[in-house]
Length: 237
Length: 81
Image 1 (cartoon, rainbow over the protein chains, first blue to last red):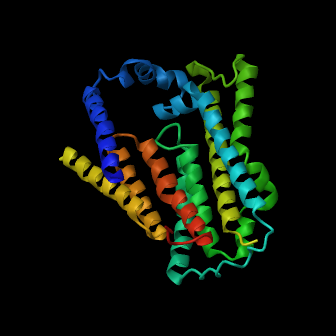
Image 2: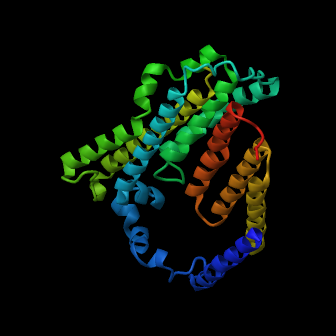
Image 3: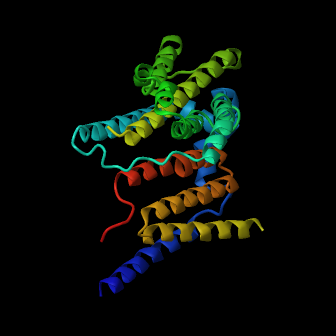
């Protein structure tokens, strides 16, 4: 009975959805709303006005800079929430209930050791070229975090903690919001607008420098946040 | 050809999603979910959104999976009724 009701409900919801889908413009159609409003302007003027050859970066860091600052803050807050929950549940008698981890096999150790430097190099490339090619701080930072996770599995506990020592870790967690604020204030000082960028080609170097600094800040912050969450969830105390 | 590729990927995506929901073994569900992210990533690339694809591959298939695995290792592997 309940099952039948669910199926009826699903069909009732599905029919208007499918009907509405038929009204959507076809994929890639130049008349679709995505290409006729601000999108068209960004595509035409983005590269010279916002300074990055990758239009996605133009939108994320320049046209929609405020949104990205909020996003960066959300990530930091999420990490703070995770830490608050995990730290609060510490200290009870639960330590030691977990079976000890099996040490990684020779294959895992070898592959991680060979791949880690190469992956790290790729991550740096993704961050530093975020304004030219697809990618940027968020993606590159996540790759750095993944390298950190892989290394933690392979290294001894003492070496793993030395990858990111405790004291700088606490600052680096907030790297993304901090760098974002600094760049925003720089824009305020130079161009009277928070997060303002130079609009002309003559100051293109400064503009690129600001974009790359933002990407680096987001990357470092993201990587540290991932590493911290992993470390806190994985530790036994 | 391109349309066929899309349809195949979408079918794979739907079956992955259904499998994740139905599985009682959370470890297996996590791995299938990582596969779901991988298929999604291919779809993003195919639809011309390489930036999103990179995020999906790094966050969806990579880091989320690891965090889920950690969570499972600290709780239980099988879903209880």
